[in-house]
Length: 354
Image (cartoon, rainbow, N blue to C red; front, side):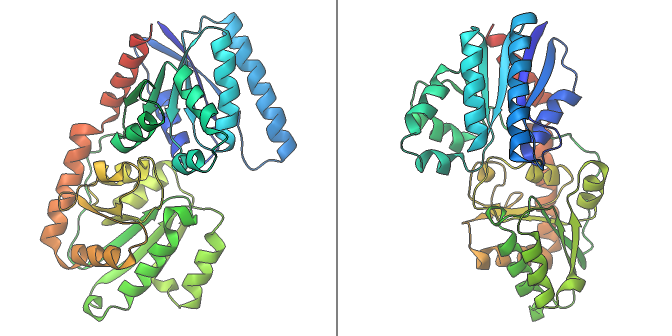
């Protein structure tokens, strides 16, 4: 039995990293036992966060002393996450433990490039790790660009393979944005594109609805934008969704649009594809490794609103094109991104380090 101490954020924290952690905790490994310790919590005061982190360090040290920990698997993002996990990595190495860093942060490239004094520390952290998991080829190239001797492995995110598949009748189409409502996710581009499409005379015969599922610091501004343009009847704002509610929303949609400016490999894209939604997104992170132009969707340069609008319009007007993209979306998930394949790769990585 391989004993793994896994480090991340509290499971109440919203976002893709938490979803990945839950996939580990909710799926039983045959030969792996996971103990999970969160080092970060949100929606509390600064002092509580500090105390929470200190308590977490005590729990980590206790586990390292008392339990037979073979591997410490650390989920890492940028900014505060980096500094917290740096301390954890150093503690684990003092105890002589194998360390895996699992890189998630969409803004980690900017964090690295904008902090010249920290670059040596970041490089050292990756070098002392026994393995660094990255989400795709572009992220692998970035980490190897820091130092070729960093031991990276590409393990892309995964989702459950679904039996159900969405349909499009050629008239009624729901277009989904599923993400944290912040500028980085392209929410303002999404609502601007929606406004243009709603006012496009060529599309008047279609029954269009734009679904925004998420919450975040820019939520009020988005609501104001929609209200100021009298677009309320075309939008449905669901707030933050998870579990069965998220699944039900995805199943009622026909297109997934995520105009992000920075990403790793968004789970929301994979989740949408698992139900057969064509995807229109941007060429950031590892998105264009899973969303292939003219196969299961389209990727455009971040901020190219005209191109996003053009691709959405194509999918609305051409139901045969939509069917082809939809079928391919589902096939890609079934063949390459199933959770069982993912967990097998993780277990193989664990075994290789012992």
